Length: 167
Ligand code: FE
Ligand code: FE
Ligand code: MG
Image (cartoon, rainbow, N blue to C red):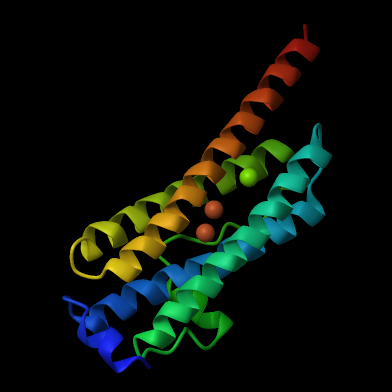
């Protein structure tokens, strides 16, 4: 733990640690949802979509790395068990039970939208109070915003293709 680092946080650190752990849990669920989705995916454009899902999986894992680092700096303990991920995460895990491309895209778009709201809330909470966490949340948020658009644009391409193909 960084003692001075903890002192300069102008917030209830335990409350902040709870939020950081919720985000940490969500990142593991997002990682696994993307990683597994890329394996089971079926349907048109599956190769293009799978490579985006794989890239996002690695980016979500990197978000978990950043969050674990910040949690430890502040004297907290990252969620210790996989069961804890489901319990702590504000964003639900959506199993890729139906492997059709459009279904996977929709599930992951919903996940990104939940992540965007969660990081926006973390930024609102830490603004002018904890610059280090604020800056980290901004870095992650920028990537979640990119993820949402990547998936929505693939979803649009898929729609165009399916509609044109059926004429
Ligand atoms: Fe993420
Ligand atoms: Fe994301
Ligand atoms: Mg991307």
